[in-house]
Amino acid sequence: MRRREFITLLGGATAAWPLAARGQQPAMPVIGIINPGLPETEPRSRMIAFRQGLNESGYVEGQNVTIEYRWAEGRHDRYSELVADLIRQKVSVISTGANTPASLVAKASTSTIPIVFGVGEDPVKLGLVASLARPGGNATGVNFFIAELAAKRLGLLREMVPGTARVAVLVNPANATTAESTVKDVQAAAAAPELQIQVFNAGTIREIDAAFANLVRERIDALFVSPDPFFNSRRVHLAVLAAHRAIPATYAGRDYAEAGGLMSYGSNLADTYRQIGIYTGRLLKGAKPADLPVVQSTKFELVINAPTARMLGLTVPDKLLVAADEVIE
Image 1 (cartoon, rainbow, N blue to C red):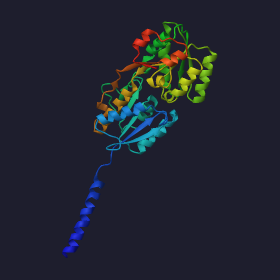
Image 2: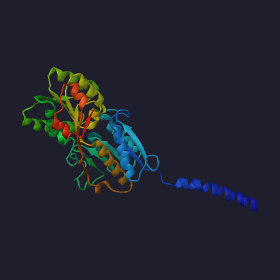
Image 3: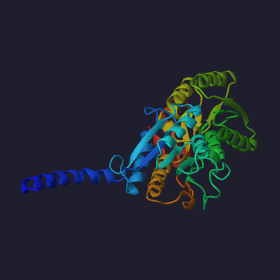
C-alpha cells in the first residue's frame, strides 16, 4: 500500500472514531411528569422547586436529564392515557407530583418503572406502599397531610368568620378517595361546635358555577374547598366566584390565596415538589423505591389575603394575623 493511501485511510478512520464513541454513549435518562392542569394553570413555583430538588441530586434538565411533561387538562379520566404513554416511552422514573388520583393510576399501571408520588392521604391506606419506612415496591414519595388538616382549617375559618353556622364543603367526586376523606374529616370536626355541613359536588367548570349558585340559594355562611388537583387548576375561577358571591372560603394551599382566595392552610407544596425532585434524582442514580422511606411533610403554612378579607367585610382577628405565615396585601 502506498504511503498516501495509508494516510488517507487512517484519516478516515480517525474521523469516524468520535462518531462511533458518541453512538456508544448512553442516552440521557428521561423523567415522565404528570401534571393535572395546563401549562398556563400550573403554579410555576412547583416546577421550579422540583428542578431545584433534581439539581441538588446532580441533575439539570437538558444537560444530563430529559423531562417529558404530560398535561391532564383538568380531566381525571386522562391519567390512564398519560401514564400509558409514558410507559410506552420507557421513561426512567414517573413523577406524579402532588396528585393522589394520578399516583394511584401510575401504581396500578406499572410494577417496574419507579414512581415518586405526592399524596395528601395515608399512602399505606391507599395501597401505594407497604409501610412508610419500607415502601417495599416500585413507589415512594411524600405524604403532605392536606387531607388530615381538615379540623385545623375549619377552626381557622370559624375564627375568620365569627358566627358561622352553615358550612359548604366543595368536593370533586372524580377524586373519590380525597372527597370521601375530606367530607368525613370535616363532619367529625364540625360535630363539637355543632356546625351544619352541606356537601356540594363539582368535577367540571359548569358544575363549579352551579355549585356556587346553590351556595347562595342555600344561604351558606362559608365554604371549605377540598384539596384537589382539578380545583387547584381552577383556583382563579374559584376565587373570583367566591368574591362575586361574597362567600368566605378556605383552601388547602397558598396557590389559592395568591390567586385571590380568602385564606389557606396546608403543607408547603413547593417544599413537597423539591423533595419529589430529590427522590427522583436518587432513583436515577440507582436507588430503589423500596428502600427510600416516605417523607412526611413538616412545613405547614397559613396564608391570608387581606384585600379579599376587606372586600368581604371581614376584619382579620389579631390572633390570625400573628399566626399567619404570610399576609398578602
